[in-house]
Length: 229
Image 1: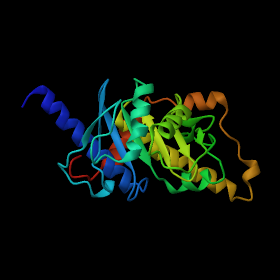
Image 2: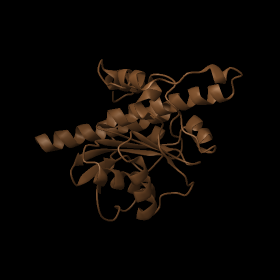
Image 3: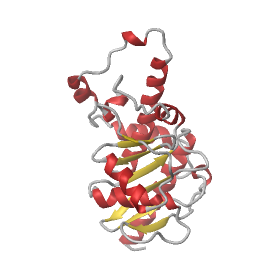
Image 4: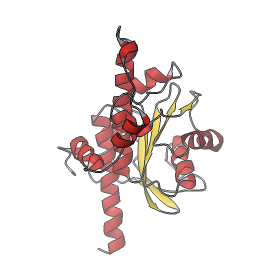
């Protein structure tokens, strides 16, 4: 087996692990997808099926960063294309459907940095204010433009997308994003919400670093027990 073949097999494994981890964490259901960059012009997206039932050894599909989607690839994978094209440092993208983020988005609201996990999205994740599916390049491009250099973009009534320098980071941001939304939702319903204090800019800076194995620990947590971990 050549080095290129071995590398491709490892990326396939990581994409399957990410897909099942997102499903196990309740961040996707029948819908959602994730991908990892292969090189400047291509990425690998998971199989077009519910992510929790992607089987060990099941192959994803190689997709060009620009150009038509290959046959059988879900239409919203255009979002991945648009992000990879705009941000060469991005190594992984997750399209997720987390329930707390979904609920907040209906209020045109995204979570503020109330705690450490939310600090990664300070001052708050940008909102794409449309519930329409990204089935064309215009909408997908708008979502990618709204994301900008952030780690996540929330779509009103339509979940979210996270982007990281690796697929493991994108999965971590997906879990952190939903955790931030859970805190925000709790505060909205609390009689003492007015007493809550968001992190200061200095606290955000101190809490949003990735040292100490932040991504590695979350990846290990989310993939623990997976047959391919």
